[in-house]
Length: 271
Image (cartoon, rainbow, N blue to C red; front, side, top):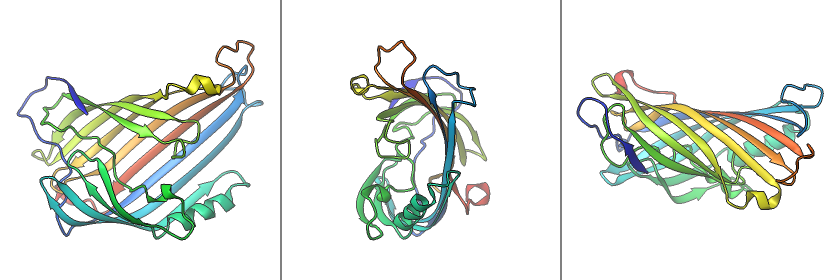
C-alpha cells in the first residue's frame, strides 16, 4: 500500500487498527448480490431477454481482542448466527448449506495496524469449506504512514475465484483511499474508496472478459482502533465467448454487490 498524493491541511495523523486487549466487538457483515444475464446482442434494459436473480446474507459475529501492541492485535472471531436470502426457488437448499457451514466458525488471527490479516488457526463446522474461515474483518485498507486530510493512498485486494464475487471474478480490486475528514477532535476518521477491477492476465484465453468498479466509505473509530462502519458497492460486467467475436454471440452478466460491515455496539464519541 503506497501513499500517492500529498496535500491537505493540519498535522498528519496515524490511521491504524489498535483494538484494546479485553475488548469485544459485535459485528454484522451484510452482503446483497444482484445478477442479471442476457445475450450479448441484447440491451441491458431488455426485460424480455434478461434473467435476474438476487441473494443476500447477514453474518453476526464477535471479535474478542486477546492481546494488542504496536505490532498488531491477536483476536478471536466467532460466528454467532447466519441469515441467508434468495429470490430463486431453486436456491434455498444452498442457503441452508451455507448457514450450516458458517454458523459456529471460530478463527484466531492477527490484525496488523494497516488491517492486514494473518490467520493463526480456525475451527470450522463439520464439512465446511476452507473459505468459511475467512474472517469478518477488513483487508489492508489503511496507510502505513501518517496522512493529512485530503491525502490519498492505494491498495490492492485480491479477489479469489471461489469468493463472494463469484467464479468469473479472477483478479483484484485496485483501490484509491482518501482521508476525507476527521471528527470528534480526531476520534473519527472518514475515508472514501474508489477503485476498479483488474482481471487476471489470462482471462481472454478462457473466453471471458470482466470489468468493474468499486466505491465506498469507511468510518474508523480511533478510540476503539477499528473500522466500525464500512460500505462498499461493487459493479462487475462479465462477457463470455470469444474475445474477438463481433457477431453478438455469448452472454453478458451484470452483477451489483453491496457490502456493509458495522459494529452493533459502536460507542458514543468513539469511546
